[in-house]
Amino acid sequence: MNRTLMLTAALALGVFGATAVQARQVCHDVRVKHIQSQDDHRILGTGVGAVAGGLLGHQVGGGKGKTLATIGGVVAGGVVGNHVQKNAQNKKAYYTTERRCEDVQD
Image (cartoon, rainbow, N blue to C red; front, side):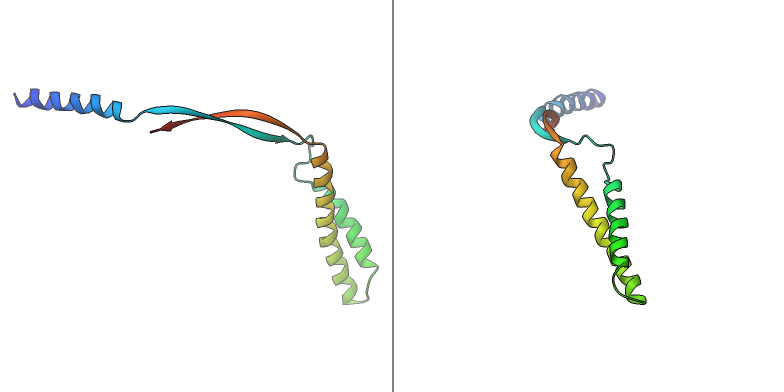
């Protein structure tokens, strides 16, 4: 009798426990940006900018000031070159809408 009672209780909990949690699928549209470039990290723009900035910075100052100006020019030129390439890539980008779904449990 004790086994029958325990088996009945386990089955009841299993049936009611399974129906208590319901899953449903929620979908939404997401705008996805596509960049038509193989240089996603903008290495080319950063490198060209750094070289140009270093050359310009080297023309300024004398002694240790020239070295500091060259280093500053490399850093500033790299940042500017990176932004220039980013803007150029953004002009060529296109967008699509994708539907993404996920399961949600209530």
